[in-house]
Amino acid sequence: MKENFGFRLWFYFRVGWTTYFGLLFAGINTATVTYFLAIDKIPFLEFIFPTFFHYVVILASMIIPVLVLIGWGHYRRTAAYGSEAEVALESNPYMYKLPLGWNKEALFPTLLKMTEFMIKSNNQEKLDDKSIEEIKELQKKIDFLVKGGSLKKITSKTLSKE
Image 1 (cartoon, rainbow, N blue to C red):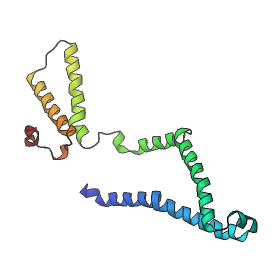
Image 2 (image 1 turned 120 degrees about the horizontal axis):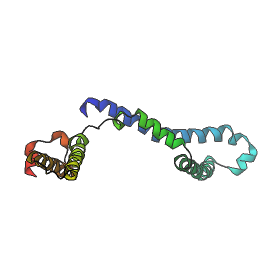
Image 3 (image 1 turned 135 degrees about the vertical axis):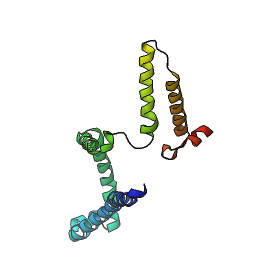
Image 4 (image 1 turned 30 degrees about the horizontal axis):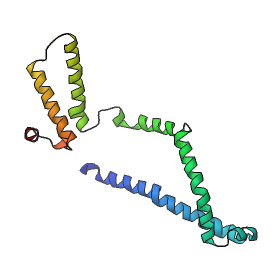
């Protein structure tokens, strides 16, 4: 994490800016510009929206439900989100490699041992002592992870305490 701390900060800044500040700023800017450049100058609209506060309340009560429906449609009723997910999956290098951390150290080796055991069991073979010891070691690692541990800093002393 230390080597990419700056990039993490940059990512969090961009998410905060675009998702929260940008959204709020764009909403305020749009409401202000449309009210003072259009509605404030047209007498008929001044009757419907006597003050800027009235305009914001009426606009928000109409636009928020419409935007919620558009967002729901984006995720549930169109192919847009599926396409976005496909592109993200294709461009994410961790989807085609084993992620760093515990998957490489405990989960996938355990799956390999399970398949080895299934093959031996199918052939009526017994597990040798080395295989049993490897399985016990993997069990310790998985138990350590389930209890909230991290395999990045794991040592044999840590596992023997368990």
